[in-house]
Image: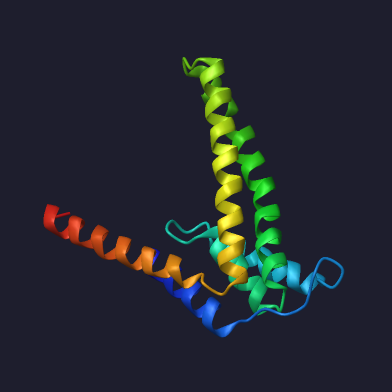
Length: 149
């Protein structure tokens, strides 16, 4: 599936320049289409952010707005997963301060990754992720075949 995600990013980057739609011009049809793309991304190996950005570009969203919209869409999913797993998390013997620190580090690194992602998207260089995913896919297939799985 990483190969497919790489192809989606490649095609989206090369064929869909994006448009001028922003928060004031997005339609219900756009939101539904992008939401359906997010639902498809439940398939393991399919990038949720990659697929929703691609869907946004397909629907003529501005490139930067498509990325920001994609990240905003992740908030309910992350909160839902957190609520769903909170009981399990509380049953673990984890130092509370370590948990807070790891959450803080994850938040800061995620913010940095979003900035890099948006810059690459705006400059039409998202294909770098495609190369990365294709190399990772080949490596994963090679390891799997060599182990006899």
